[in-house]
Amino acid sequence: MVEPLRVLIVDDHSVFRRGLRALLATVPEVTVVGEAASGPIALRLAAEHQPALVLMDLQMPDGDGLTAIRQLATAQPSVHILVVTMFADDDSVFAALRAGARGYLLKDTDNTEMIRAILAVGHGEAIFSPTIATRILHFFARQPAVAATLFPDLSESERNVLQLMARGMSNEAIAAQLALSPRTVRNYVSNIFSKLHVADRAEAIVKARDAGLGR
View 1 (cartoon, rainbow, N blue to C red):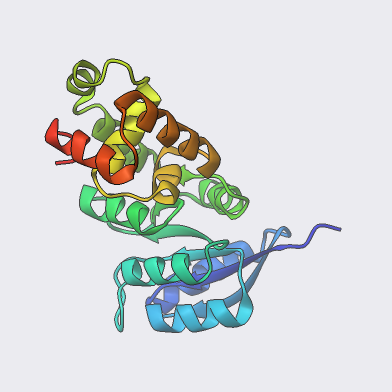
View 2: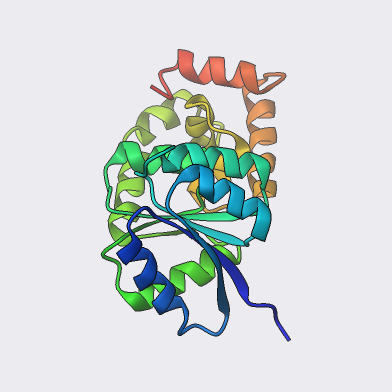
């Protein structure tokens, strides 16, 4: 018998927490192991209950969601984090992904899509609301021609990875943002080092930023 997906709900609005818990009670594959109204409480409960998935709001008292995501990703890297929030601006989206979130949903997501996303991210996939996915696509479309001209030996996927490296993102954060496995990202990074004739990540970032990427 497959163990249910252990979920921790983190949101400072009790009405939303109750609604989400009631929704998940209809999903046999999921069990809610706890609720938290702030980042510090979420970290304590995550350490206590060892959830597989944390549903995290971004704006909360006593430590915001971004800080909690960073700390949780460091303390329990095996835990998958799905942001569920009202904020759809670029700064919030990319800050959450850089911090370690594997998915980003808006609170107005319908129940069917919410359940699908929770199950998917809980099992290691990366999921985004349609609006968020569009923003991410626009983000990658901003400088493709320039990057291709500057680094013609790189594949499109390698250029995407290099752009995010130049923004200071770790391999794990790049994997989450591009919906790739960490191993695939490591392979792309190795190819980038070889094609750019650099010895390490720092040299690659310097070369990319000197060319105008990552700004």
